[in-house]
Length: 82
Image (cartoon, rainbow, N blue to C red):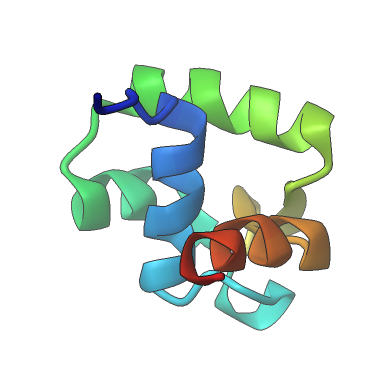
């Protein structure tokens, strides 16, 4: 029996895989969309939930909102490997 992975968790894993793991490597929604081939509206929706859960931190960079994983978000991704 296979379980469906929630979209938020899939996005969290993608952010980890593309290296958005600290503020210096934060990415805008447009950059995330290019890396993940996801629609920006979907990314915005899922990022909001991840921010509320404390897994992603938003920052203002170069006049644009950018996002990166928090330590808790990184730990959640790493649970896949344990």
